[in-house]
Every structure is written in C-alpha cells, then in structure tokens.
Image (cartoon, rainbow, N blue to C red; front, side):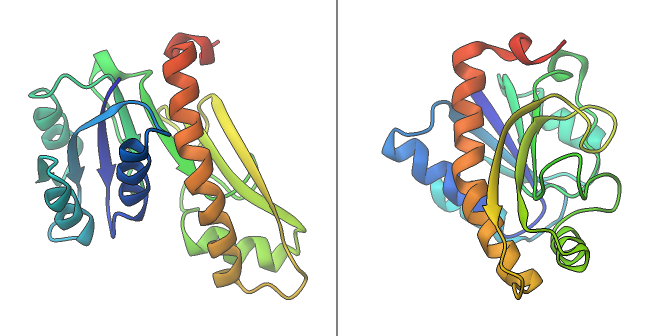
Length: 188
C-alpha cells in the first residue's frame, strides 16, 4: 500500500519505517511526508531519505498535498493535531498512542504527559496502541497493542524509552496486518 506519513517533530518513527521498509520487514511504500510544524527534523530526514516532504499548517493544506499523491493509508507518526482526512481516506488513517488504550488517552494526552500520568498512577504495565483514527482522539478500532513491564522506580523518561521501543515493533506490525487483511477487516 502507498502511504503518507504525517508528523510534528523529530521523525523517529519515520526513521523506523524507513529502516524497516529497506530491510523488508515492513510492507508498503512512503509516498509523501507532511508536517504541521515548519522546519522540524522529521522533514529534513524525509528529504534525506528521498521522500517528498512538505509543511502544511492545517487539515485543508495537508489534504491538498495528499490529493497530489495516490496514498491508501495515512500514518500519524507523532502528529500532534486531530487530523480530518478527505472522504476517500476517512477509514484509512492509522495512529499510535503511547499507552494501552483505553488508559491514559483522549484529548491532551500525548507524549510525556501520558508517561507522567502512568508513573503518577503507579501502573505496573504500560505499552502502546496502534489504532485507526476517527474524529475522536484515540477512539478508532485497535489494530495492535504491545505491553511493557514497569519497575516501581521507573521515571517518566524511562517509561517513555520502554514504550518507544515497543512502538518500533507495534507500528510496522500493524501496517503489515492492515495490508494483509485489508482496511475493512478492522472496522465494525
């Protein structure tokens, strides 16, 4: 499947996708990378990898760019805004969240906020969830979840590192699963 990657920051997940596609462990091809934040490292990395890379400040501008590419999946890779896709991609947007949904999710719960909340609550297991995105934060159908064990003295930064390692496995696994089963398999 042909994929667009939307990001807002450093592009660590883009690095993972690029490396796994090159190694043959992740299916699909990256057709375009778009950031809602200008000048981020993720756009530089996209250009270095040879992907068309653009800044687009809002959904309308993002969708205008995607209209020029034959994309079948939109991957939210550290994209920190609620994305509203065009009708043809409404059920084809995949997000990763740094917790086991339904815990520590929803509006305002992203990045280190999630990990600080997990540590404050004293959870013993955290992880990540790859899911289809809809118009409500972290609500769409779940594709893959990965768990990580937490130590009583883990800091939020240590939790973040453990969860990101799980994300690097879960997101490519989810993409491969969607490509194998088809998008409609996951939607009720």
